[in-house]
Image (cartoon, rainbow, N blue to C red):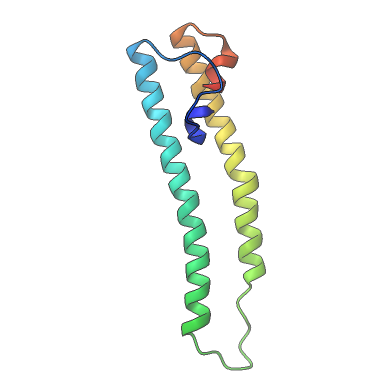
Length: 112
């Protein structure tokens, strides 16, 4: 969990010492960076695209306005429901694998 969320200090006092643990940690860190990049990209795309479309597109009075509320609703659902569930699921599975490989308690693996 600490690695995926990018915390500078882990939430536990353990660290990997085996080659398998180091590889799992590397994969976990790369996955976390990719996930955070995806979230940042989604935010930038929604904001930027909405602004550009509203500024550049000349709409007739009869044309419907873009549903910014729907875009915001979808983003909030993604950011506050889907992403935390994905983080928890993947972090838990990889944390358990890391704990089993390193001989830690399961909670230490999940928190790391």
